[in-house]
Image (cartoon, rainbow, N blue to C red; front, side):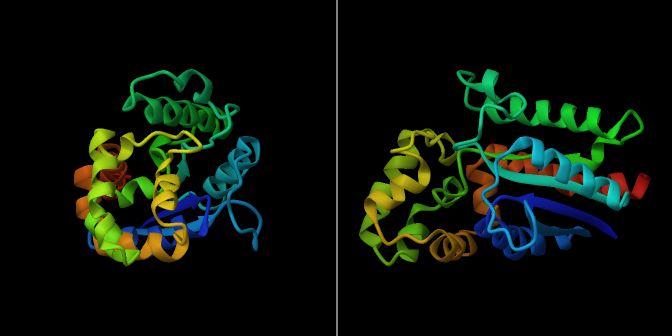
Length: 227
C-alpha cells in the first residue's frame, strides 16, 4: 500500500484532500489522507514554522513506510518560513518552488543524512485554496447561486493570467475577491461544493503548480514499488 499523509492548515483543505484528491489518487494505488496541523481538536490555521517542522518530523519518524506532504497557503505565510523572505519579488512560478525547496532542505537537515527525501513533498498553494475555484468561474457562480457573476469571476482569472496568478493582497486575494462579490461566501461550504463540481482535472489544467504537486504524488507509486 502506498500511503501519503497530507498536513493541512484548515478544515476546507482537509475536506478537499479527503473528498476530491484522495479518490482520484486511489485509482493509481496512492492512498492519501489528511490531518490538520496542530494538536487534536485544533481548528487549523497554524502558521508557526517551528511547530510545523516538529510535527512533520514526528510524522515521518512515527511510520517510516508513510510519505508526507503539505498544503499551506502562500497568502499570509510568515516570513519566518524557510525561503519565504527571498521568494518575494520572484516571478510567480518561482515563488512557491523557492519556499518548497527551502522547506525540503530544512526537513532533510532535521531528519538526518539517512532520510530519503522522496518521502517528503512540500506544497505551497498559490495564493490560497480559493484560487483553485477560479479554474471554472461558471461553476463557482452556480455554487453561490449567482450565475450572473460568472463573467466577473472569469475576468478576475483572465486579468491575473491564471487562477494561481490572483495576487495575495489583503484586499484582492482570491477569497477576498469572492467575498467582495458575494458577502455570504462560506469557505467550507461553498468552497468544497465548488471544488467538487469543478473537478480535479480542470484544476490541474488551469493551475500548473497545483498540477505539478499532484503529479509528484502520483509518481510515488513508482518510488514505493522500487523501494
